[in-house]
Image (cartoon, rainbow, N blue to C red; front, top):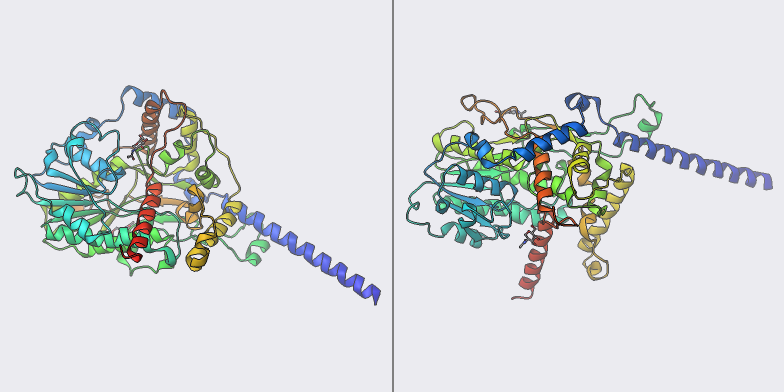
Length: 515
Ligand SMILES: *[C@@H]1O[C@H](CO)[C@@H](O)[C@H](O)[C@H]1NC(C)=O
Ligand SMILES: *[C@@H]1O[C@H](CO)[C@@H](O)[C@H](O)[C@H]1NC(C)=O
């Protein structure tokens, strides 16, 4: 009897040890897959940036910085029209305003409809600072109508009206339908409000900024243990959607289900895009631009600007991204995104039956995608503010992301917990599984946008490459930080989203209180 028990406990011990070993092997292998770079994308983007080419580009730009004048000949000619730009002080909207002014649109023919105050250094002086600014909450139909109905100076009041709708809220990683409200109210209802107001105001062209993220599918992390453990090192299985092509195909197919998008943000941008494109008619021609993937080009952008702003302190945000240095992704400069809005407008304004109308076009910088390591390396090499990259195993971040998601949904599911559980602070709260889908290996195609206009394209060629655009942004950053010890805090669109969420929550509480 005693020997039987001993034998059993030895067996149980062995079993537990084996299970532990298998789990460990499973996770190690999963981590190897998460740190891999598929051969197919290495072929598309084989070269990493070198110190020499970064320095050379930087020095060239130091002598000849990129200014509006440099690409003035790429901006389509001035039109005798009026312009409303929602989000007109943001990354894309701001560049649209600057390009309109550069081509000679009088400031009084332009109106910025925007939630946050104008705070771009390149807009605080000069003609951009004289453009009309109407503080507006697009999630409110009343506020939006008011901004559109405001009378125009008589010199331009009779001109046809173009609307560029670039305003949106960016919440990068929430997936749960339980917290869809914010994206829904600003991005979907907000877009419907802008469209309705545009119609009432008699607009005949509306171009909206969509997102390359609309086409992204969630990546499937968990691979069956059987498959993973029985494969050899050479024949490791692939993670589903680990490498993706960003294009417009999904638009011509039935809408995807909520779970087939990487996050709530994409769900809302897809819905908004269909609202805009679906409204196309000869009276109001519409279309959308999908920037792919991260837009950069201002200190407040979430990609390069966000990383620069970390300074020497390894901020949580950077830790959130530190696992993805090997990831290869396309980026697109705000200047490239803005100018393609103007191409689209020129087409829709000149031809009521343009075949380009009523659909999205994806655009990216005119070069192969880069890796996050390239970007971090550029900062390390060129920035005068300190920068330190800590590389963490992706698998640990994956675990963390599920815990963060679970934890942040608790007070939503159980309101009683709202006052008990401390809220996650800073960028840690964005460390949710959706982040891994939007930060996986990707290529984007300019195939349709770069076609000639008479072949149904937008004639987009791209003005800035990612190397030039990022070097220029770091150059501007260095100029602004010449005499400062620490990195300045700029508001990124993601931190801006937190502010809107807080404001919305406060408004909701007030409403409940009947105030
Ligand atoms: C404007 O930007 C500066 C950084 O250049 C920042 O310090 C300031 O708080 C911002 N102001 C507003 C109102 O957002
Ligand atoms: C280009 O546009 C066509 C429709 O005109 C669409 O069917 C196709 O999927 C698009 N290509 C890409 C790569 O998105």
